Image 1 (spheres, rainbow, N blue to C red):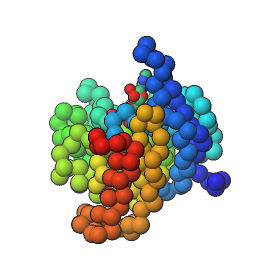
Image 2 (image 1 turned 90 degrees about the vertical axis):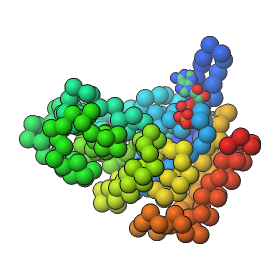
Image 3 (image 1 turned 120 degrees about the vertical axis):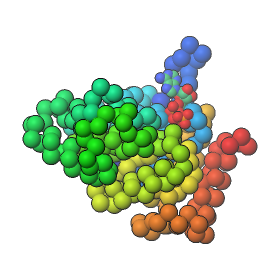
Length: 261
Ligand SMILES: Nc1ncnc2c1ncn2[C@@H]1O[C@H](COP(=O)(O)OP(=O)(O)OP(=O)(O)O)[C@@H](O)[C@H]1O
């Protein structure tokens, strides 16, 4: 295993103790994510995708095995602001403007006011929301709100972005557009991205590496290294190479889940 891994999980397990008995959310998961990777996690509902991301973010603690983020524990990584986290719902505070929402973590972290202003401006440009700083969340479309929440996660310049199904609730056209924008952003900022999705095309379009997970207990069924070029117009989805990778993901999902995918 290489020294520079951003995420390194070894025999990672997490069992939740519930009133109905133990739930094995993750079992013996081994994975390395390298700097600059765009890794998608795909698998049926309940296979542990969110749990895995939450362990990386120090929002859950594993019950077995080890995990490091930038070579240190998730707790140390969180304290050194190693990652930005984007949730399923945009989660913007309705009483704060878009700028105010992006500014909030910077205020909590004690950034200087002038630094806050510069960072808010920069990330709004990155997600193509320049000029929307003074609007309130309800004045923006769902896609724009999700972009604002990505801007918030980018504001303190973490090298790692953890994204939990950020575009799941959006219609397909908006989602296509945001996928394109996210790829451009990844390309220009050289971030490492861990991205949870239910969509095979989304996983194949975005990723350098696709992690196929299977449930009960949550395990990794397959890890697919993408052979697609870094430059990816949306039309790439019609190419034989893309379709072949999508087939392999589907096969991995089937193998891990019997017939009910
Ligand atoms: N806090 C918790 N307490 C008990 N069980 C939990 C808890 N969080 C998750 N689980 C269980 O762990 C398993 C994995 O859940 P997780 O949310 O990680 O799955 P997922 O793959 O992200 O699902 P989805 O695609 O539906 O979001 C599920 O069986 C879930 O019910």
